[in-house]
Structures are given as structure tokens and as C-alpha cells.
Length: 487
Image 1 (cartoon, rainbow, N blue to C red):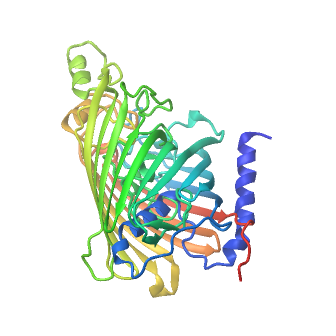
Image 2 (spheres, helix red, strand yellow):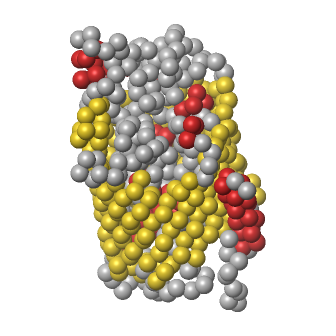
Image 3 (cartoon, one colour):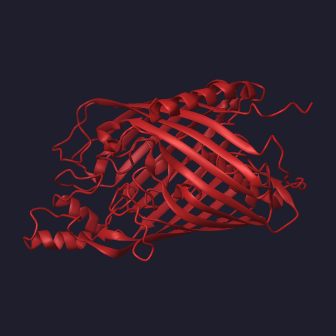
């Protein structure tokens, strides 16, 4: 049996075997993606100062020693024909098209000791994105792998050692999930992680916009578009993460490996040559009584074999290259740095709002995430309690992305990035509105409908606007056959 078949069968078994345990509980959003679960865990721990009473310290039991779950996410997208004065090699195709992607994940974990755990994820991704993910900086489907030639074989997504050092005897409840197995954690603590992970498993999280399985689908809605975070083509890297949590605030630092080339699958293992530093300060002030607030301040510095937009332009104008070529202008040790602001606010028991702002220097090439140098997004989500669908949710977000002067001149002269390149450019900021409705269909199943309107795709006023409609099917289950009835 092939590796792909094994993963599909295993995921199916986990979902199937997990249903009995899932049915015995309230079928709420107990199946959020790892990013979402970590966001809630972080927010709960950092806001522990508001907890009415201490939670008993955590002890290992059969109920919380292991984790084994599976999920499957399918997204189908379609856009009709739209206007385009010209089309280049990295343009969004103007003819009507549709595409379907899939993402299957098998998550495992074990608590070796009370404060030590090992976490392991295997994934399989397949299908396609519209235009193979070319032509839009704020692309419409976060699940899409930008290089389909990577193949369909399962791959290790995460494998990490997670160590907690308690600094207080007061505990607070935590949300168990693939990135953390303890049901309770010390209010004051240090956490260390080492291994393979996604940088955005822990940085720039937002409980309203970080999860393409239940929330928005756009790259610039679920992440800060200008955050060129360290990772390979699939978004994973190896690194070391340290976090400090206290009442009402937290701080984290991560040192990550960079890819050898832009949008590359191979990581550079020489830290003196290439690496990325990430820092984030998280604050939970009390702005509204009994309403959660989170503010996150992010900074990052990437060191890698990056090309300079200005050098590529100058070489072209001097007749040294037939078109501006960012690859020919690469030099080891170049630096890209940037900052981010991320906030969320509960307004009522069912209504929440968020906002993000991101900026990077834009002198050297977009290397990992997407071709965005400045990004602004804000939006809100609303639970369906008002129309007697308390497990449903509706959301809307508005996004605006931009690029630096050198970046836009490079594209206007016919240069290509790893995502964009129309052959010319009549520059305008890329503007996007996205809205979704997520329907809790039955037990572990949810269905989503999403629509996005994109003005100036690829920052080009000569193309678009374009509508993109999406349908999503998500199923997720927790295997808990080892649990025993304590009643």
C-alpha cells in the first residue's frame, strides 16, 4: 500500500473511531485547526489574571496522556471570466476556471512526563489552486501548495519536543490540542519547543482570522501578508521557540531556518549563513468588562540568499539582462526585516472584531510567504445564536496589500517574482473583501460557503476585478478509545 493510501486510511479510521467520543460531548468547535487551538490556549493562559479561581495543578492520567486526531479539509473555488488587458507567465488566468484542493492531517502526541511532551503531525496535500496560486498576492486559498510538482506523497509536517517549566503554583485551564496536551498549565511559566513546526503556529495568531478550516480562506486574512515568515514551500521549518507567560501578558522568541531559495522546499542548515529571528509581545488588557482583549506586537529579521530589486533593475537598464532578473541579483547574507500589529476584541458574547497591520522593508525579494510589503486587514465574526444556530458562524474581512517602490518598478519592467509577473504593471493596491458562512452540519462535519472580491489582482489596474466563490467541507475527529468511564 502506498504512503498516500496509508495516510488516507489512517485519517479515515481516526475520524471514524473518534466519532463515538465526539458524539458523547457537545459538538461545539472542539475541532479547530492547530493554529486556532493554540490561539485559544495562549489567550486563556495570558489572561489568567481574570480567572475567578485557581485550577488544580495538572497530573498525567490516561485521559490526557495521549493525543490522536485526524482532519480533512476540501476547498473548491471558481472564478468567472474577468477583464484583463494582457496576461503574463505569473498572471491569474482571465478565463473562467475552477480548482479543488485537499489537506489531510494526522496528529499524534504523548506526554512523556508531567511537563514534557512529543508532538508529531503527518500531512498529505493535493489538488490545485486557481491558476496554480499565481497572480494574486492575497491568494484565495491558504491550503494550496504553490508548487504542485512536490507530489502527493505524505510528509512530516511537525515533529517537536515541548517542555514546560512552571514558575508558579497557580494553574489555569488550557485547551488541549495537537500543539499542547496539558489540560491545565501554570499561570507563570516558560515553554520551550524544538523541532519541525510552522512559524505561524505560534506567531501572529488571531482567534478570528488564523484558520482556513473554519474561518477565512485568504492568505492575507489568516496571516499578516507582510510577514515573510521562515518556512519551506509548504510553510514548515525547523527551529527553536521559547515563550514566557505571566498574568495578562506573554513574550515569545523563535530562531528558524530559512529556505535556500525563494519559495524553496530545501532549508539552509547553516545558521551563520541563513536564519530568521522572530519576536512577539502579547498583552491582554482589560478594555471592556468581561470581554477578552488581545494585542500582539511582532518583529522579524530574515537572513538569506535574497535578490535585490534595485540591483535587478539596474542590471536590466544597463543591458546586462534581457529582463529584470531577481535570481541573478541574489547574494548570500542579505536581510529583510519587518513589523506587525495584531489585535482582537470581544464586543458581545457572540460578536468579535480584529485588525492587523504589517510592514517590511521591501528592498529584497519576497522570499517565503507572499509578495506583500505592506498589509492592512480588519474584520469581524458573529456566532449564529441569534438565529438559533449557535455553532454556525459568519465572518467578513476587508484587506489591502501594497508593495515597495523598487518591487513595483521591478514588476512593471517585466520582472517575475515567485507569485507575480504580468509582464507589465499599471500599479494599484490590491484590495479584497471576503465573507464566509460556516455551517455546523452534523457532529464532526462542517460546511462553508465563501465569496471574495479582488480589485487589482497582482497590484495591476489593467486586470480585474474578479469574483471568487468557494465551497468547503471539513471533518475532524479525536480518537479516544483509551479513555475510561469515570462515572
